[in-house]
Image (tube, rainbow, N blue to C red; front, top):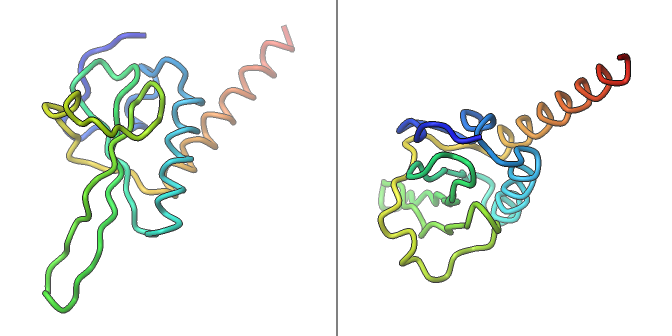
Length: 130
């Protein structure tokens, strides 16, 4: 389903209806976020808002608190293809990407996947009744 470009503060949750395969997309994004969260528990996922939200690219940021400098430092983002969920090494294809102002935590993404699976199960059960 193709919709309008995502809002400036969109998250994956806002794009569920426009994703080509919501459960697969969220599961694979969750796998990548989980891998980063094992290294840095505060890692956050931010979606790109350039296209129509069918396969949005996303980045994972890992904030590091540098108390000695009395500021927060953001390690370089890892950027992933929304189609393949592979980390993009050649960033020339996303150099003009605009990123959402909002981000998603590991817990929020886990909850979204649970809700998608619950909804899918409910729909399946309703079809069995008819």
